[in-house]
Image (cartoon, rainbow, N blue to C red; front, side, top):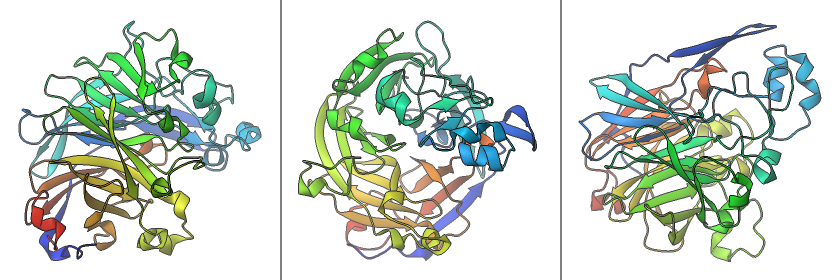
Length: 398
């Protein structure tokens, strides 16, 4: 691996931003404030004014059973504690949204919000798809403990690509799947793994079984988060968060790696497959100092294209995130470290969004989980001394 970048060659600035309050929910231990979530993914659109980016929020406000009981006093939910993957959704109607943002100086402003809808006008919610694997892996319940079931207009949106024609491609963690979204926020189609489309029969959008069948073997809550568009807008690069849940019959080079697929950006057809190897868990220093870490804690949360089959990949646990540059020139990718947040303690945990503002300026965002744990979205501009796509990055520090 190439030498690590010089910390002194990087400048990090936290940008001013205030989360928008959407609702408040009364609980036995006080009010639960729900704010706009938009830090799960970021993307720039070719031709947009300087500083303008698009952001995506995830499935909507949700709480794990333990915190719902212990932190909010919802003791009636205790019977659900044994359900792995179960979530409480205090306001299930608050679901995935796209937001257009503008970075001006050291401030981020929200220009507009697009709620995702299906062709019948139904607002997308954050529920898993009906029946089958999706609903079984992550069952959703309301505040009373009643099952919410599945939804044909549901998704856990985590990544976004913005095309010059005004459309979007949105990565969904549940299926996993990719949504084709119009400029008005209407979902036109959903690309799902081969053989998985029948579960979405009756949806008010096209369902196309075009993604690799192996992608359906994602781990619990570890579907698609990282999505990048090639500069010529012909290809999408999408990465599973973690290795497959079952690695039986997997080629040796793919074991313990995250699958990276290159897709046709218009049809979703697979074009190529690569394997992204993870760092040792103990090298994520802040996480290791906080407690035991293991391979299951590692995940990929974002990627952005640097051009010429070069990607920047965000690999993390929670407190520590690392940015790696890779070139898609071999089955198993070679990584070059660009930045580790262990060197920048002012950068918060849970980084999930990343977009290029210029050839040497990155915008990073954290996921606030809709404020249910009291967290605010944080934005950072990271400025490098030389362009991120500079070929010299592969042989030495920035």
